[in-house]
Length: 131
Image 1 (cartoon, rainbow, N blue to C red):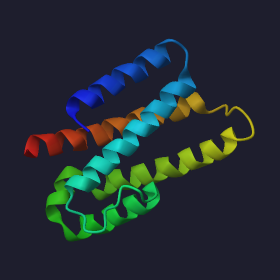
Image 2: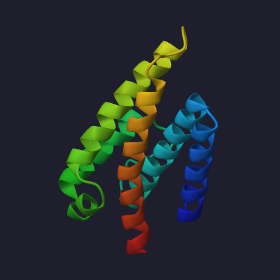
Image 3: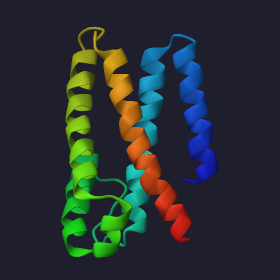
């Protein structure tokens, strides 16, 4: 994950949303957020980090690591990580609803996903700045 890939993905998301494909934009934004979370974990010197784990397990391991590592707290704090956990729960409910019918809250969930993307993007820029 590089800054260039992040900005390119954000442009694709904006284009999809402007063309009226809200669900496609939501999925792309979701995957971007997952990639950013994995980037933060890989750069956090997490001993138990495994990219194949479920994202909830990665978030909980990252939360435990924030308590131990003060340098990680400068990249992403507990408050922002808690917001990400809540968002992941909402996305799980969204995907379960999507199996049976077209969800009505896709536009509001997309807006919330963009906010989470902004939080994670700031954290990723902090990582790139430390290099």
